[in-house]
Structure formats: C-alpha cells, structure tokens
Image (cartoon, rainbow, N blue to C red):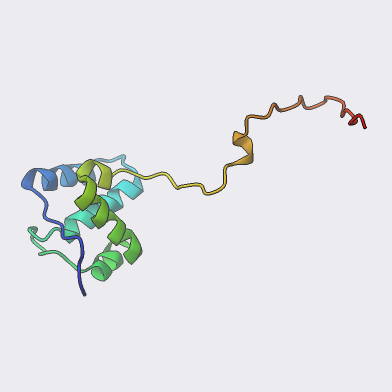
Amino acid sequence: MLIKYRIRLAPLEREQLLNFLRQKHAAALRQAHARILLKADESGPEGGLLDADIAVAVEVSVAAVERVRRRFVEDGLPTSNAAIPPRRSVPSALRTSAPVPPRNAPVQACAS
C-alpha cells in the first residue's frame, strides 16, 4: 500500500504528543489524533504502521487516519491535532438575519 504522506516526528513533537496523552482531561478526538500520529511515526519504535493497522488500533476509519496524516504534513503539529469543526453546506435557519417575531404576537394579514 502506498503511503502518500509520511510522518517523521521530531523528538520534541513526539514528547509533546506523549505529554498530551498523559493529561487527565483532554478531548477524545484530539487524543485519537495524537495516537494516530504516534503510530504513524516512521522514526518511532513501531516504525510507522499502515493506515489500516492504525485505524484498527485507534478505532477510527482509514479515511480519518489519512486526513490526520495529510494535515500534519501540510500544516504541522498544532493543526493536525486540533479538532476541526464540521463544514456546513447549507446555512442554518437559526443563523438568518431576519427578525424573529415575539412568541405571542398576533399574526398580521398581508395587504393585497
């Protein structure tokens, strides 16, 4: 299997990720990203696992492993370990700029 984005963590980056995993209160998604990077590290003790093996070990999808790898290679450690909010393709109805009428306001008929 061809690995497009190779992970080689510097000793300081590896230590930062290990320290992050030792914290008691950390977001589960960020912990999963840290574990993915540590298992994908080619200079680490495991020698860099394949995406499918990492996905099974961390209990995420192969696509998630690929996304974390790509973000690390393109943007570096802070971005790859940060939780990315989901993109919304359709704006929420609650985010419109139209004024909201009061709850018990009488309904006005349209003048024709």
